[in-house]
Image 1 (cartoon, rainbow, N blue to C red):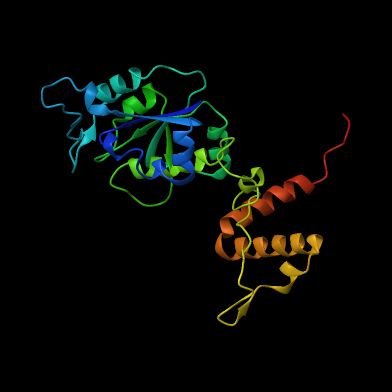
Image 2: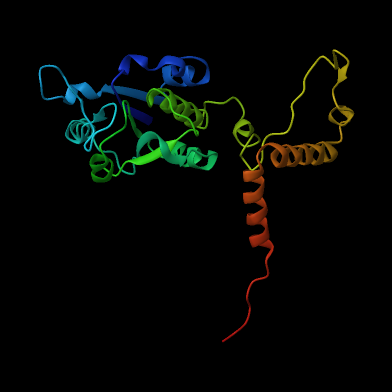
Length: 242
């Protein structure tokens, strides 16, 4: 079973949205499991303190290395289990990384709070910092929910059709093409004729062209990466013999 373990100061936030819809049904049916643990359980004083002032001065508080390390160490080790820290300074989460995580045993996720986490525990426990965008949240819990939702939907048996997870945004380095359904006409706007033509080859070509146009217009970074990758794959191999 795919199992996610969360270390948080607010375990009551979970499962939250993960308890409904696709993720919730999969959770109830045992396709995956969620274990939300309170970091304060590792505290060593009567006040259950987990943070302290930043070394060198500055605003806010920092999660202590010793407390968080104890909380991490209390989680039974699972082979190949990634240890993640949700952090705005982490590497951006991508669909390919989501697919890798979904193919594994499930992650241990640390949800940071305050001004951050003592760098020493990040290094000592080899936490992989992951970001869901260039903005700052109050804590890592909402970011963790986003990551888990992205992973869970890819688990076998969660989505109704296997193709649902392969023909969508980022699956091929492109944004998804526009979608339409009934009614045929809506406020003077018609479904493109090609989509009702029954010509599947032309439909596929139209969808591909629309996906490429959207990606170029809205995500030039993705388009540039894709173009560079295609240029490399098309470059002639060096066949010179020494």
